[in-house]
Structure formats: C-alpha cells, structure tokens
Amino acid sequence: MGSVALSDRQLRIKSIQYRLKILKYIKMANAGHTGGSLSCIDILNVLYNRILRVSPQTFGHPDRDRYIQSKGHSVEALYVVLADRGFFGESELETLCRYMSRLAGHPTRKVPGIEHNTGALGHGLAFAVGVALTGKKDGRAYRVFVLLGDGELDEGSNWEAMMAASHYGLDNLIAIVDRNMLQITGPTEQVCRLEPLADKLAAFGWSVRIADGHDIPALTDVLSAVPFEPGRPSAIIARTTKGKGVSFMEYDPSWHHGVPDNQQYEIAQQQLEQLLREAGGGQ
Amino acid sequence: MGNDLGGGAGKANLEVFAQTLLSMALQNKDVLVVTSDSRGSGHLKGFAARLPDQIVEVGVAEQDLVAIAAGLASTGKIVYAVSPACFLTARALEQIKNDVCYSDWPVRLVGISAGVSYGPLGSTHHSLHDIAALRAINNCMIIVPADNLETEMAVRAAAGLQHPVYIRFGKRPMPHLHRPGTQFEIGKAIWVMRGSDIAFVATGEVVAQAVDAARTLKAQGIESTVVSMHTIRPLDTQALLAAASSCKAMITVEEHSIAGGLGEACAAVLMQSGIHMPFRIMGLPDEETVVGSQLEIFEHYGLSGPRLAQTALELLNGRG
Ligand SMILES: [Mg+2]
Image (cartoon, rainbow over all chains, first blue to last red; front, side, top):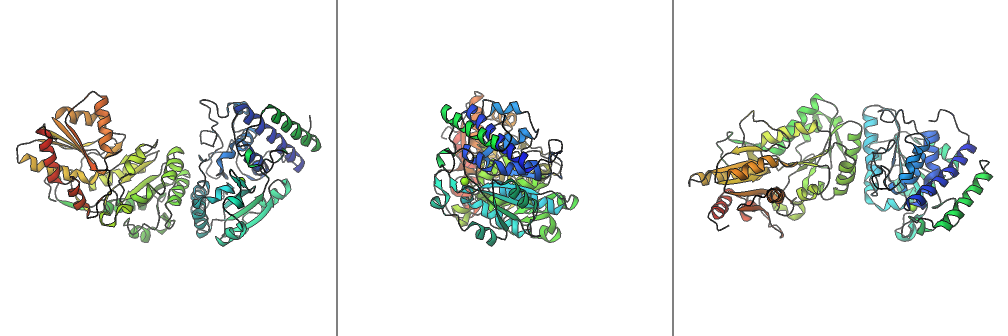
C-alpha cells in the first residue's frame, strides 16, 4: 500500500496521467496493445495504489500479495504503474520493446514487480491457483489477484483452473475480468459467445460480483470486499471500455494493437489533458 | 533379460520413482507431487495415502497440472508434476514452454510410461516426440534414466535443481545396469561397457538392449562400448567424442522418434567436431507406429538386442 493514502480524486488524476504515459511510450516504441491497456488501467491503479500489499521493498517476501497479469498483452499499463510505484525508474519506459530492453511486449520476471511471464493467453489463472494453494497449505495471509481478458476466456485452460480453484476452496484467489466486450477480431459475443459470463463463473463455484471497471470508488469497494464468501474464489467482472479515454479508440477493435500516428497522438493527448483539467489535475 | 554387469532383474523405473519420491517427501514437507488423475499410473496411491497433504490432484487437465505446478514452484515448493509423457509433453507443451521454462520455475516434469511403454494402446499413448519437442525449448534439462539406479539418482538430483527438468521413463521392470555405488551426475554419461569396435550410445530403457547386443557381439569377438547417455540435455559431448574416438563405428539407440532425438543431437556434435565415422541412428521412423508390447515394438524397429547386434555387424562390415 502507498505510504500516503490517496484520495479518489487523486487516483482519478493518476488514471489519466497513466493513460497519457501509456500512449506516450507506445508511440515512442511504435508498438503496443493500446486498447486493452487503456481498458484495464483503472483496475491496476486501484490495485497498486490501494489494495495490494506489495512494494518494491517487499517484492520477493513470501507473504506479499501477488498480482498476475494473465492478459499479458496489456503490459504497457502494468509497466507504467510499476514505474510509478517505484519498482523501476520511469526513464526505462523509453526502452519499451527496444533491442535488449527488459521491457518486452509481454511481462517477464526480468522486470522488478512482475511475478510470472505471461503473454500466451489462458496461463495466468492456473499459475495463480498454484500460488494460492501454497497460501492455503502454509497458512499464509497473502491474496492472489489475476487479471484476465474477456477474449482470453475462450481458452479452455481458464476453465480447468476455475474448476481447480473452487475445488480447493481458494478464497485467497481473486480473478478480475477486464470485460471490455471486444477481442482482436471484434465483439466477444460475435466471435464466440461468452455470456452469460457471471452465471458461468458462478456455476464453476466462484463468488461473482460485477463492477464498473473505470469507477475508482466502485473498484475500491469491490476489491476491498474479497473474499466475497469464505471458501470460494472471488470473480469480479469489471465492465470496461476498450480504448477508454480517447474518443476515437473507444470500443474499436482496430486499436487492439494500433499505434496512433502523429495527428492521432496529438488529438489523444489533447483529449486526455482536457480530462485532466476537468479532474483538477491540469498543468 | 539377464545381465551380468550390475546383477539381475530390478523393478520398474516407475516404481523406483514413486518410492524415491515418497522417501524424499517424508523428509521434507515442501516436496509436493501434482497429478492429473494419474496417481494410479504413477504408482502414487501409496504416496497419497501416506502424505495426503503433499499430493495435489487437478483432474484430467494436463495444462492445469503444469501451470499449477509452476505456481507452486514459484512459492518455493519442490514440485514433481507427474503425468503420462504422451499427454504431459503434448497437451501441456505451451505451459511447459511458458509457465515453466520461459518463466524459469524449477518444476520437475515427470513423464511416466514414456516412449512405447503403452505400446498396445496406440499412438495417442506413445510419446515419441517429447525429447524433440523439449530440445527445441530453451531452459529444459532432459533426463532419461536407463535403470533403477539412474532413476533414483535422477529423481533425487532433480530436487536440488534451480531450473526446469524433464525426466521420462517406462513401466516395465528393468535389469540393473550398474554396480551399486556407481556415480550419477546430471550431464555426465555413464560408461556401461568399454570396447574398441562398436560404440552404442543409448538412452533410457533401450540401454539394456544395447548391453544385450554387446553380449551377443562379444561371443563373435566384437568388442563394444555402451554409454548410457541418461542426460540428453545438456548432452555429455565429452563422453560422446571419447566413445567415437575409441571405436570404429557408432550406433545411437533411443525409444523416440529418429527426428529430433538423441541420435540427431549426437550426429550434430560429431559432424561439427569434424568426426566422420560409420554411424547409425536407431529409433522410431517417420511412420504410424505399429501396435504391440514395448519389446515387440523394439524388435519391429530394430531396437532389440539381437537386431542391434545385426546392425552393428552390418555397419562394421561396411554394409550399413
Ligand atoms: Mg477484451
């Protein structure tokens, strides 16, 4: 947790600043998963600034909370937040995707603060089940948070892990679904229908809540309420908008890994800076 | 099969694995075994009865098996992920590649009933691809023990590794190939016999077949070297080159596809070392593998003792 508690307003400002950085470094790298990073950044903001009991000093401690980003492609959001939390220097973000950089286009353990290498979909939840099992076996108090994409849930391995998590009563495991309704081809419901998602998760033995994935207080409330039921893993369906914060990127699958051209970048910056001023954090 | 080297018939390597694991787990509660509805085929029911808190069952879900094992390993547990080799290394290959090898969590992947141990069950249950697949993935040691001693030592040595390892073996009782007290070190081949005519460089359960061939050849005045190349990665190139320089011809023997296995690994080392000698890779060819017992399949594809002896004679007589 942060040494100084940040207000909702301060976190809202942070979210916009994070969005500006995500775009800045994706633009600089000329590569990145723009839409998904903008969609999950508020979740990461609340996790790292309010919920997770982990810091650069405690990373590596056996009792730390774990965050595993199964939707590894939204790594820019994670890098920006980790740098902000002091896991590594902000200037390193300029090396994103560069030759010999630690900051690959998907998360790796080479980067301070990252628990597990991800990027292929459908891996993070099962890995997290293993981490959570040790927590139960050894009576440790840590929680394991996993961020899943909604398109990612097409992978059957997630559902194997869902079964195991409830079978073992892992109430120290929390899955957050970044439910932005899009995947690379288009709407999730057209590609391969996911709904009724909450019912499916509940049928697999999870305790499910739905929250606005861009609302700081709502995210704080839901993430502070885990486990929702003792003896069950918790699932949060976070309703989000892919590309959130930039008008022409929102809910457009072409921004899955689109990089803005100069003009688009300028407009995006202007829009986010306007939001920043409205939030009271303008320069 | 009788054997005069180490003394008599042993147990199935699978059984030795299960016993070794139990004895290690009794000493250390951080030793865990993860199974995918495979405790019966893994001879681990006794383990489950004795140490129910140290076995994690994930159901028939090999992808989950491997990823959960990685998660457990990340918390410092000494994890053995056990499943038939055919499923472990095909169904869960991406989990092996990413969650174990790329992420560098020291999971001990144990492929049981490997090769054609499940010969009668058809190709779904054969694992003739596993060594090739894992050789092409960075950061995975590959160990294929030949007998009970190698199995026990490999399973124990694996506990101390800081990086991923794959161990594979079968379920048929194996003869003892080594005298008790023989040194075992990962990455160091074991010389079973020394001779100056033909070198058999073999791995796993066909090492015994090579020994059998060597005995047949000896009766005809032909001296064999037999090397148990139990570690395929990292390959003991020093032993390989020594075997090559001590003999007139070399035959590699493996219960695996010829493509991508021990033989090709050895050939690459020899060629790049400028060594050209009569050389033959004995393994499973590129065809749908016949159905039969493990020994029948060995005989069919020239991996039995008598057929290996025949191949050696052909090779030495320039008809190979
Ligand atoms: Mg999505």
